[in-house]
Length: 181
Image (cartoon, rainbow, N blue to C red; front, side):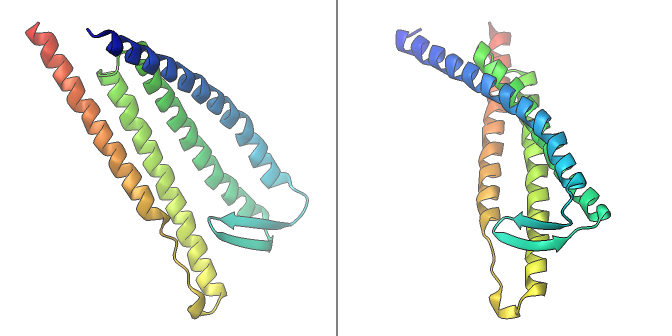
């Protein structure tokens, strides 16, 4: 094997270890902030809230306890999915740092991470649609604005599926080469 190839593989492994550590800290951060955020929303003494959804801002909204619980449930779903995404990405990167990229377990973690990301993105789109409907109902029909972020999200997930398929093809080729040897 080429010496330059060994250096490149060593750099990829080192960078993967750094990402692994970063994802570990992100996981700890999510575990700590999730209950703090839930407690802050439920037990805040001020009955008025400022809500921001994407580019839309709603100021001084009166929230009942039921509305607060629904907001906490929505945020908890996002945090749960973010934790699943971080865990699966962390496990996938662990395989990269070991140099064992093309195996069934790595592909399984990549698939699960992508699925969690898609569900998170779907929740984001639902919240954005709800905010957009609220804005349209509160303002005149001439001030309707549409955010095109969903197009970039679809392009991102399309690219991620192409990379997942490349991993699957690499795994199949790896298994075939092991059988021929």
